[in-house]
Every structure is written in C-alpha cells, then in structure tokens.
Length: 172
Image (cartoon, rainbow, N blue to C red; front, side):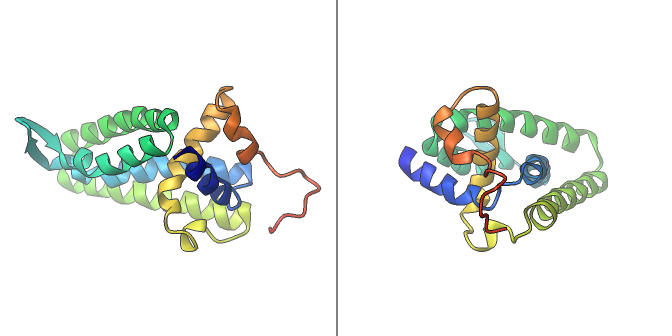
C-alpha cells in the first residue's frame, strides 16, 4: 500500500503545513486516543481464554490498517498505543467511575480544542476531516511520519511532508 499511502499523505499534508498545527495535532491525537480508549478499558471480553479489554479489541482493526498502510510507521503507532492503553488502564483501575468519566471529558475536550486551534489559528483553514473523513485515520500516521523524519528515518516521506517555502503561493 506504499503508493496509496503516499498519495493519501500528500493530500493530508496540504491541510497541515504549519509546524504549530502539527504540534497541536501531536497533542490532540495523544489526548483523543487516550480519552477514547479510557472508558473502554473497563470492559473485558474473554478471547481465546484470556480477558482482553474492549479498547484493544476495537482498536485492533485500525492498528492493522496502519500496519498495512506502512509497516514501520504502523509499528511505531502500535508501540505508542501500548503506552497509551497502559495509561488508560491505570487511570480506569485507580479512579472512581465519576473521576474516570471526568478525565475522559477533559482529555477529549482538550484534544478537540488542540485540533481546532491548530487548524483555525495556525493553519487558517478548516480541518481536512470535513472534506476527507478518511483523514481521521491518517492523523496518527502523519504524526509518526514527522517523528520518523525528525529522527533521520524515512527520507522517502520527507519530500512529501516538507514545509512550503516561505515565498510560495500557498492556499492559506
């Protein structure tokens, strides 16, 4: 799926050129993922003789999708997901139900706010999600690609994700 992923990423990046918007996406995606899985960690389902949280079961298809889009980036997202699942599980096991739902609301609220500020204030345009709903699944891949490039990996994606020259004619 390499060519398909690169084409999708090229469209996605047009809505995410400002580095401050990218930073807001890192924050927003981490908060939204953790918030989304938090209540789901309370529900456990027996699967092949072991108890598995509903969070893992529901996240599994999208984790597989990310691995299929780009194996290296998918493994990076899987590693981060394990950490975020652990954080969510710890919160849900230590906090009261009311506190857990309050934390859920704060994480989701802050995550949405970070995304909105990134687009409205720094990018100056609507989120690509409204035009391309599939971009909901590309955000984590974009963020992981940026991390890989910053660490000196994935030069093949660096040209796609390169910032616009300051004198370019942008759509902003």
